[in-house]
Image (cartoon, rainbow, N blue to C red; front, side, top):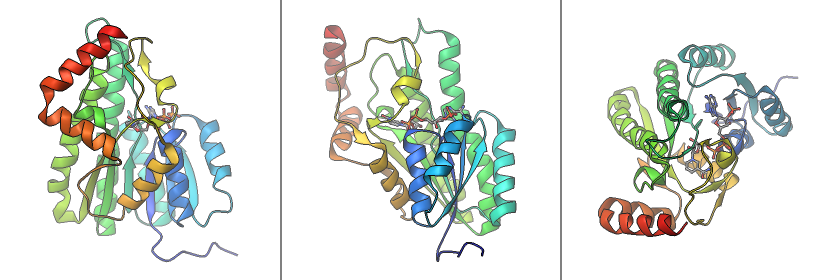
Length: 264
Ligand SMILES: NC(=O)c1ccc[n+]([C@@H]2O[C@H](COP(=O)([O-])OP(=O)(O)OC[C@H]3O[C@@H](n4cnc5c(N)ncnc54)[C@H](OP(=O)(O)O)[C@@H]3O)[C@@H](O)[C@H]2O)c1
């Protein structure tokens, strides 16, 4: 017997679904009965995700894809539309951290971060939007970071890539409004995931630790936000405070950063 279609089930593309926030987000959508196209480069991890979704009301279809490849994203969206007939939500989540000074880092480490975090989102959006237009509308959720508004030293290229994403999200929201496509940009704070291990660059020179959110919590909030009309979202008071300080008290933030990094 075929799978019963849940009411208001949506077709969702989650990039970077083999670990951390993306993995939990794919599962959270499947839990509410949605059909999820889950992309990443690691096939074994995607297989693990599909097994974890067994018995859930929704469905997860794995796709090996590199977000730096426009062709990969076009192929994924074409297959999802063929399979499920539409595309309703994109969570542009795949991303990579970076550590190291702007001048002394290897260029390869900086370039891969820019290509993943900026080009990757652009390719995802450019593949998803035509399908959403044909579906009569949709919702794009971009995954930015609190450091985009309150950057610290030795991860400047990462912070800049997320600041670029803030600008993209803001302009896309206006460009895509006539197509009934909404854009929500989430400024995520420190979250437990594989982010620190995957990060490019040299170890060392890390500032003090902040309280960490679980990837499951962030995923639940992403799913909630994909049904709301919020523009920019921060998930907790601490992150709001950091962002406000970054925006309105840059001199204070600079002093704090100088002090923290001098003693670390
Ligand atoms: N964790 C935090 O504290 C934090 C804070 C703020 C914002 N964020 C943002 O949250 C998002 C998810 O990060 P996370 O914390 O969940 O990190 P993670 O556990 O390292 O997961 C990153 C995901 O991105 C995928 N990915 C990386 N490069 C890719 C590429 N070229 N093509 C396709 N997929 C790629 C990885 O899959 P494969 O390696 O299998 O391809 C993996 O599934 C990122 O955008 C990150 O910047 C994280």
